[in-house]
Length: 151
Image (cartoon, rainbow, N blue to C red; front, side):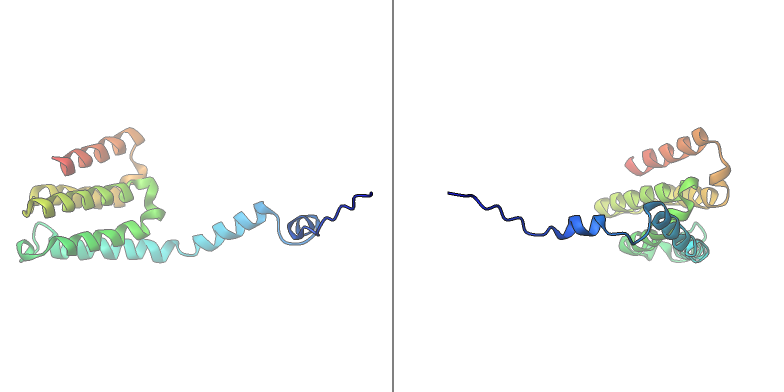
């Protein structure tokens, strides 16, 4: 008796052996270049979101006490969506802290305006000079915001 071995062609192995496509380093460089084209519009959207929050929830905003928690939460999520281009400034982490604060306010059913104002001031500062701050100072500011949000 003889044994016949049958090996079906492996399509993936054939594709690996074939020449073609692009090198991983070239694909990464192209992806980074494509992402970089979004920088200006993302930073503009970040600034617009900060201005919108300031207009409705800032210390001088008329009628802010009548605003609902979900609105501030949703507006802050817009910052998180585009803050990747300002990640070295800590804006994204400060926005997450603001969301945590709004969650706490919603659970308690009452605004903590002093804490909201501190977060908004920190977001403005981080957006403007956060990237140029020494890392330990920026970390201290963000840790402080987390403590304020958890209080």
